[in-house]
Length: 164
Image (cartoon, rainbow, N blue to C red):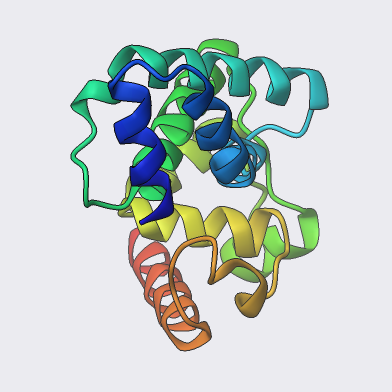
């Protein structure tokens, strides 16, 4: 894995290796934050916070595992914590709300609905319903093919209908 090469170099004291790590992962981190936050300044602030945390925790990363997933998880968790603090979870587009829920969805209901879902289902929910991405456009980001994305989407819709 290319990132692992630079992680090893960074752990050995090569500070320039972190620039390469940043270049190789910035898109993943940006998308992980963008799923929940749309404001450019906030995204940039959160990205900076994520990379500061990565610097602090990089020795906890297990070489040979998926670094992109590891850093995306950090970004996602930090962004969710930010949203909880600011209580600014995004609401669904009214057309999609009607399609999925047949009722008006406020922030607390949205949080409740998301609580029924597994992490991967939450990601698919946000990308497909809240942001309107097509299955083929977010599958690579989640390391899923189109069929897996669609299956997870159908599963999460079924799960939500059972709880609503």
